[in-house]
Amino acid sequence: MKFRLISAATVLAVIGLSAGAAIAADDTGSDNPYAPSYGHPYRHGAVPTREAHSHIREYATMKGGPNSSTKTLSYGGGVDGIGVTSGTPKVYIVVYGSQWGSAGTDANGNMTLSGDANGAVPYLQQLFKGLGTGGELWSGTMTQYCDGAVARLATSCPTTGVTHIGYPTNGAFAGIWYDNSVASPSNATGNQLANEAIKAAAHFGNTTAASNRYVQYVILSPTGMHPDGFNTSGGTFCAWHDYNGDTTLSGGAASSPYGDIAFTNMPYVSDMGTSCGQNYVNSGAAGTNDGFSIVEGHEYAETITDQNPAGGWTNHTRSTSKGQENGDECAWISSGQGASANVLTGNGSFAMQSTWSNDTARCDIAHPIVH
Image (cartoon, rainbow, N blue to C red; front, side, top):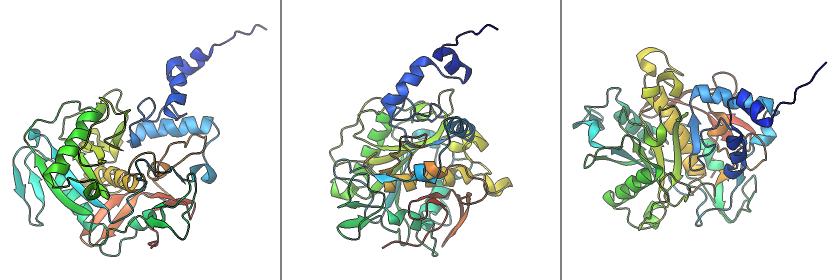
């Protein structure tokens, strides 16, 4: 019997990888080559497409598979003194680019755009207005995390010297701005998205570091755009978040005179249909915007738990879960514990995914508020 030696490059090619990509894993801190952040370390908390997520899970299984102990999050020590949104979260929506068309207002006082065929803009406004109302406890999971006098790599918060993430009582929505002064780039870089967030900070009058301390800016691109490669052959993600000072951003870090700026790259995710969550929870017309609330809810939860990545709460275990945030740990669960579901707020019901809870060691769609 004859045996033929197979090179590592050949083995990698069989599973769709290159030798160069395998080497790059150590550079990014990820050892799952199917993750959207692989080779793109600024894509913090990236929501993978459902197809990419299947490959991620297959690879994790091949490597031994994550269990609850490898999903535990630990504190990163803060970046520029910032770990989490240890105050009441504030969300500003930035409608980026003149391609959105003409603006109007609906019966709920939400901005509408003629180029927004699915009504994603008013839908997201309602989502953030609704968080923290009607007794919703989806937000409760995040309140267990903190910053302050917490040791690096701690997996729980001490009882003194820390401030927990705030519950968004009466809603997290802080404002919306339609920036039609420019066209949204066809393929915006991370640097361009960060600069748009900085521009938004000035628009909203958040011109000090203190005014941006508990704030995040959602940069919402119009349909047909490909921010950071979204909906292209290399864009196996639905959204991601970061802050302006990340030197690994595509196009480089963006200088801010207003302190650190947390932002989300939020594409028009229905351009990718069910791959980014359309009808994931609700069928028919009721589920048209499921992807917007699932994906943006994922990024919101990760921004408040890891505002200046990766200084907040992430997975530091050397495993296939390394580098993941609380949303990543629970992405695209369709049944059983932590399954995505409708979350009822004071102004409506929204499809949401669960997030990782250290104190219950599972993915929770609801959790008591931790004060």
